[in-house]
Length: 517
Image (cartoon, rainbow, N blue to C red; front, top):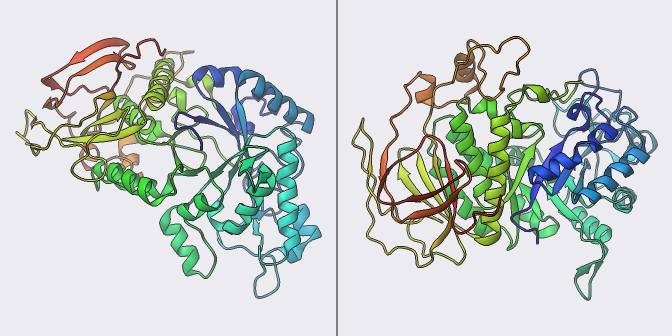
């Protein structure tokens, strides 16, 4: 079982550095480790097909040859050197596996066209029409296809890879994944131990996408099915659908927090979700949350809730621009926000420590988009919905006199070990003056003219923010318990009790863990 305090950092080699090579990426591995991560995940590093290519460089997910390295990125020797240096730094390496499809001109498509889906005219085909740069493998075509793909996994394992992130794993039969894991990890059926304890991460899909594929007559497998068959970790795309409704202002964050309990109960025991705010397929968090304090609040929440923290290159600097998947578009590290970097590093240290010492999670709805997240060393006494604790408080906002429900339920028997107090109420976009000549623009707060109108179109801000509402007056809450310890956001010891004003910035407080940093 993967420990909950595991953390994964995604690198898209082409756009990670100006050089866009494995050698240049190798030089930055120590920085990833010092930030607090213990895994580095590489988007595909194999050659990209020419047929149907999107953009100038093509998508790394349109692979032409599963068993070689894209010459634009370097050589196989460079890859081995990357893995060796990662291990020396104390990092493990996860490699992207793209087994739903290949490029139309791939080695497999040329040598074994019978292993692919075909349309009514006999041409190579795909399940998703808009994925025009790939063709899909047909897992019912031949057992030799399965053996070829599994042998390829063994090859990468023997080169030092520690785990696999499996692209759109939902669209590949779970029976294949089960056999692939047994063979690659070399599991002993008698002892049930792995000779090679590789970690497997499934890129699952939005539930609506899964259903559309099934409705079209194709196989598609849910996260519980994927975990049962082979996977240690899966993407939080079932929860992401809930988050999208929250971020559009259609629902309260309660919707997502309540769904965490559903995940805990319908997934096999020991399954982990990766929690992320962005990746190469999703918009940057800093472009979604145009208020710095709101970006920090969601960062704390994402890292504090049950699951494994996952970050995309540049997220730690509050980068607002997402690099193109199809072109050369390197991260502008000079345009990052050093203050957000410090916050992100300390937040990751605090949340990882909280998960190590306090594995049980609960939350309280304080009303007004304010939530108190808590972690315990032993199971708390839960009442109410899902993993929700009784509010046991009254909320007062100066503008509305809003009252939160008061519960007479008994307080939890266990004392919290860590708290995260987050204010998720909308803030208007922050406009800043243009940076002076030669100065770096902090990407998480630099808003272009008209950005608020663009956010309205994109649906990233909720109704109050879209309407240009003034910053809400922070509510006062009566804390149900004393919060005392070290705050990883303000870098101070705090002791909060009774009635407090909910701060604009999040709190991340750990009891008796001041020496974690």
